[in-house]
Amino acid sequence: MSSIDIIKTVTLSTFVYSTLVTAAGLGQWGPTIEFPIVPVATALLHDTGELLVWSAYSPSTFQVDKAGYTQSAVYSPSNGTVNQYTISNTGHDMFCPGISIDFNGRITVTGGDTANKTTIYVSAPETWTAGGLMNIPRGYQSSATCSDGRIFTIGGSWSGGYGGKNGEIFNPSTNSWSLLKGCPVAPMLTADAQGAFRTDNHGWLFGWKNGYVLQAGPSKAMNWYGTSGSGSQTAAGKRASDPDSMNGNAVMYDAVAGKIATFGGSPSYQYSYATSNAHIITIGTPPAAPSVATINNMNYARAFANAIILPSGSVFIVGGQTYPIPFSDANSTLTPELWDPVSTKFTKMAVGPTPRNYHSVGLLMPDGTVFSGGGGLCGDGCAQNHFDGQFYSPPYLFQADGTTKATRPVITNVSASTIRVGANITVTTGGAVSSFALMRIGSATHTVNTDQRRVPLTAASTSGFNYTLKTPTDAGVLLPGYWMLFVLDANGVPSVATTVKITL
Ligand SMILES: *[C@@H]1O[C@H](CO)[C@@H](O)[C@H](O)[C@H]1NC(C)=O
Ligand SMILES: *[C@@H]1O[C@H](CO)[C@@H](O)[C@H](O)[C@H]1NC(C)=O
Ligand SMILES: *[C@@H]1O[C@H](CO)[C@@H](O)[C@H](O)[C@H]1NC(C)=O
Ligand SMILES: *[C@@H]1O[C@H](CO)[C@@H](O)[C@H](O)[C@H]1NC(C)=O
Ligand SMILES: *[C@@H]1O[C@H](CO)[C@@H](O)[C@H](O)[C@H]1NC(C)=O
Ligand SMILES: CC(=O)N[C@H]1CO[C@H](CO)[C@@H](O)[C@@H]1O
Ligand SMILES: [Cu+2]
Image (cartoon, rainbow, N blue to C red):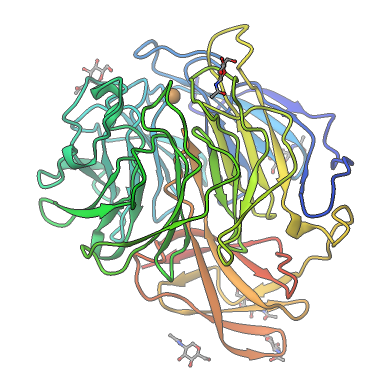
């Protein structure tokens, strides 16, 4: 079987916009979309706007080292079609991996059930290709694309043995990994009740200036990892009094200002009370320590939630449990909330019908909606398997009554489809608009999405409905790769995005 033979095509009969009526200001959930697998991991395909999802060797269960292939599916928002595939040619079961999207939009998936492999999704022509083996086998590591285009990873004792999962870096141009002896994992370990198996899981990593990566959690301690030469590590302080916050979320909602928001998590991976804590971390020139502000708490405690940055700068926080237990839907937080970066307040949104906990995902779509899906992978017949997802429409897509769709601003032209870091972009719109944002195309699994990032843009000059926007000059801020360009009107209603490629 080739890497991408279609197994089955399903066109959904439910491809209609939800007519659910919700109160003003809460947003709206669309219909439930069924998948042939549990969507445990996901990435947006930059060329088609389709949603790629995958599980393990099986649609519904997993086993480390059981088999070298992965079940996947692609959902096409334009017509509601789901195509199911088996990815077999790289011998990699990509369950519980690290994911990073590189400067060329290649979705780089590392470790997991097959702990030493790297498999890369390439579009046009779409194919999965083998990357070099990691020096250290890993599962539950995180990875981050760096300002020079290489991909850093650290942690990951869920598979491939316990402990010693120090940093290494992948060079896409040589297709190979190199250990960074100056990047020890020890400073970023949590004090998890399950010990080494858990202490290095799901690092909150952010590629930043000069090849540095900020590790902002989930440990109490934050660190800068430098990736030049043989690597470096510098302690970066603590998130105020936040405890270890495993399976919490951290999102760079304003890269221009160096702003990261963090939400929830629990001291241990499981059987540990989640917090509702929230912080703003402000980063500057590494390795200077960030500043940290403790802000008002979320309405709910959460671990295993997903946090999705919207083009407006608000963050949609969905799912999770107040007391995290893998493969359980007890204590689910079904009410999502929207965080406003200006007031720093959290507002409860429309209740979602399905628990989204361990092994759930969330992702921003080019139409400004949010995909929320998955959860489970606990064997055939397990009630916590959620073979489905829904698109949530935030309040910014509605008029004040909360049900009538808002008229959206329209992008009629963008001056170039490829833009160098620091160059101007001229965007032409169908009418007056007020703000602009680049949103990096995301990937998600296990609460981690190190690809998503928001870069607000300001107009350097305006002529009619032609807006010339300045872009940041540092590749650590505007990480090259594929980004969605949104314009927003005076009411904060976003356009549908135009995808552009940012290059060095
Ligand atoms: C649905 O759209 C995708 C592209 O987004 C296309 O490849 C596929 O053939 C379409 N399927 C049907 C049944 O129209
Ligand atoms: C990679 O991992 C597989 C099993 O997970 C193992 O059989 C193989 O020997 C490993 N390869 C190397 C080079 O370590
Ligand atoms: C639209 O943008 C393209 C580049 O993407 C440019 O070549 C073209 O001149 C623009 N057209 C108009 C009408 O502005
Ligand atoms: C961006 O546009 C502004 C306003 O038109 C201009 O002053 C500036 O020189 C441009 N910058 C670049 C890098 O082209
Ligand atoms: C906007 O730009 C287009 C080319 O992209 C040009 O034809 C048009 O005259 C410009 N309009 C104004 C008001 O500058
Ligand atoms: C903190 C909390 O709500 N814990 C509950 C989680 O669910 C179990 C099983 O339903 C309850 O026994 C706990 O009280
Ligand atoms: Cu997992």
